[in-house]
Figure: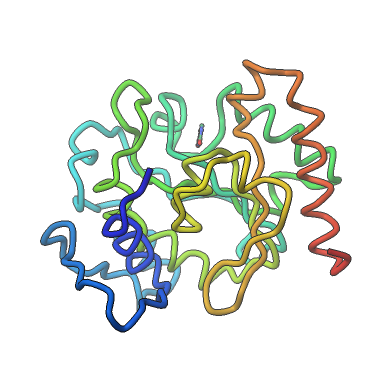
Length: 225
Ligand code: URA
């Protein structure tokens, strides 16, 4: 669960201004992290900055950063959690078993990997695939925020609880976040939340629900929802 300070830190790092009641107690930043340098960067400069990023401790254990892959002006942006072992080795998101299922989910929508963009909340692999920590998410958030500005997708599909909570700046459960569209950023890009493909590999019965999420996303994109 995010406490109010964590929530504000996430939102600020993602470039989202949050409405705060006038009499709310002032919150201090979680740590002395310098502001993200991502804001003014073009795509090439952003990729270069991510490749040498040392904003959190995860840089020490990585083989390489995993920037993201796909179409540079996509309708669909898929946001996952963080690179795993194979992604860390190959420098590309979702290339392992979960990635194969993600490809199949996209194919079911008539989409290939090349026509969407795929990125993660974190650009570096957490050790032993543990959950990302708040400080890591906060340190990394500006990179994805700038990617989203430059990509300007028409819909964002968040796969998994951590991707959804981090992108939307909310502690709500996956169960609460699924089933209705959300909005991201000043342009209110629609966001639909579904299960992480790694979870679906462990719980194949939930694939039916995931398909409903994908259909919701397709309706939202078509302006029908
Ligand atoms: N899981 C993710 O969330 N992202 C990847 O890139 C791979 C597995």
